[in-house]
Image (cartoon, rainbow, N blue to C red; front, side, top):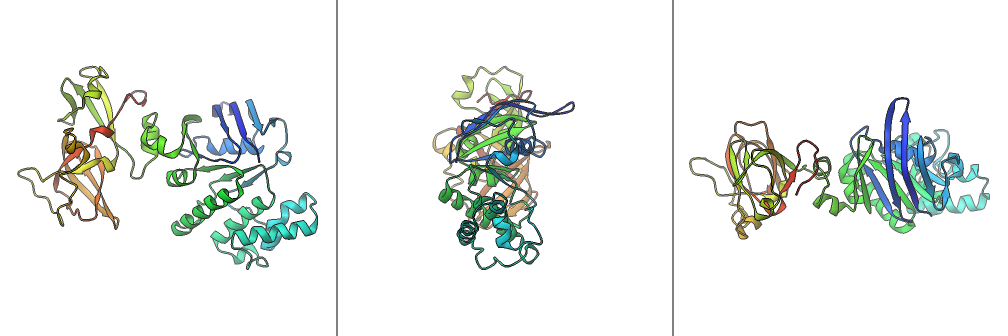
Length: 382
């Protein structure tokens, strides 16, 4: 096992810069996730660590060893690919032990290690089968087993769950986390799925356009994103963004005025200038129906009159029109638009809330959880 350190790594392909100024250090034994939209450079970083790509500039260390000029086979890392890359003519046991066989490890040690790995992955009853006789989840576990059997210093996982169905992906994700807790091997995991990133990672590296946007533990990044890209990428449903114009007494959002807490006034925002307001769906509450509008509820939600912002005398309201209602079992997701505007808000409420498309709702925003972004740079101001 070893730590992994990248110092100002850059990778260019002809005139295109895939990654630039990538600098971070993963302590020994931690599970880090590289996350971001397609084309952000996360797989390029992983392949550079593996030795499948060569950094154009910068330094890469595995443990205390500079590995820029060391070939992939000598870096003592194990990589699991999205497409599993199993040998179809080999059995499960032969696939798991192949890396050890290539390193000319003693046959008895190979057999012992294959059995131990197969038991830990619940594959011990499938050792004689060929890959074509396995389900997608079983094939993925064989690929993981082959990597584990080598006992490398570093695991590199490139979207290993993306080909699995939803339930199997959830189950395998839990198995991965448990395996890491048992093995304690430094792991770098690439995904575009923010749920995988939030649930698996000790630390998340959020990437966009080849650059690091933020590094931190999942909860810190969720609660305190550096910029609008990070804020909207992490979270399901994503953070709501409301274009607004600052006025002396608040923010004008599509003709509706939001009063603002004292902390926002201290920012000395410029009167008449545009800002983007961010608020997560769980920090929006439904008030009593505004006068003159009809709202179809089940039983009245008990929290609608007792939200944090009302309790603290920090109220701010918006009138919205319901577009789509998505019952999700224990909760309901409402997508509602601001009248006369293209802005759509995601609102997470209890399962007993049952508005209809076309209904208008009065929303109360918990401004203790309000974000203010610069619309030009995307940087967080508050």
